[in-house]
Image (cartoon, rainbow, N blue to C red; front, side, top):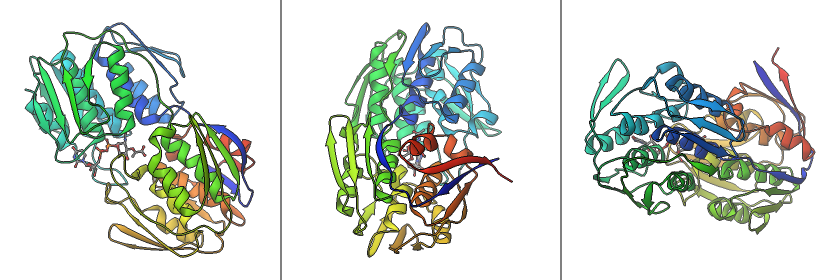
Length: 417
Ligand code: EPU
């Protein structure tokens, strides 16, 4: 196993570019199952989750070439079965259910199960697909779904789910009639998926709002699309600038979709200058405490919560973070406390009392965003921090330590002894 070793205390300076969005690319790759021919997806980040999705699609019969510029030929699908071994390593694998069912009339997809940050059920996906005519049974941990032809339906989600919205939106593209999803998730990655599907002839409107309407078509042409930049990676890089009292400009930044994050960084006292696709951040030592509640887009993203917490450990005063999306997304707190932070967790709230300085320590990553949070803390800390279980980081950040090194960080990857 590998770990990341950081000698903290260097102010980061310079320019860095965000990569393509992981969560957008994963959904668009699953969407290629909807149509035969060669799909072309550009700006795909080089990540472990992307490799897992490639392996799953190849297992189903998709022929894939390229890396950043992917060519996916989904003409001949041999199997409609997504096995546990692949789904358990990456929950986004469940996104193949809607497309397989809509195009082939049946699918067998493993239930993903829980993960470190929460139980993460898929009941809303299943209920909606049933409303569209699918007959679904759950046997031995697998979802078996059958449907002659999906039909359009009016669907009201109990809560806005990103994956649920994507699964249903994809299935509805090939359904008979019109599907309306109410209380749909509004995340930018859903809009990016809709743009990709429209490039293939799908009739989707309302994406980015709480009501999405999809008029089914007989078949889709190949997708031609460039993946949007990753707003969570961009936010993480900005916090790297702020926490090291540096001056960092993030290019290829989806500024229009980062409102909640940029506003909080300003409230904390960072100087944030934005242009069309670029954000520059500068910070000094006098950071202010804030209150933050995670919520579905356009609220503050749960995927930025851990990274923001790192920054707040060094703000003067008491900050409050309330996590409303996932029930177990504070595992990083105990690790930050080992670095000298003062954080108390009460149910869904973390109360963070700012300290003067973090101290380097050996810490362990528990999930993707927790690993980014610990690296950020290590960049600011006095002394050496060793972050282990770094395979979590590789799932969702493309070459993070290289990007940070170019900004002046003393950071390297080592084999764990
Ligand atoms: N939920 C249900 N039933 C469902 C579906 C969701 O109760 O059928 C609940 C979940 O348990 C959770 C809430 O609804 O409490 C929201 O979950 P959602 O379905 O929106 O999350 P997701 O689609 O599983 C995506 C991202 C996550 C991100 C969340 C929230 C991908 C591949 N994953 O997950 O990204 O945190 O939306 O924005 O798009 C990450 O990148 O680190 C990550 C975890």
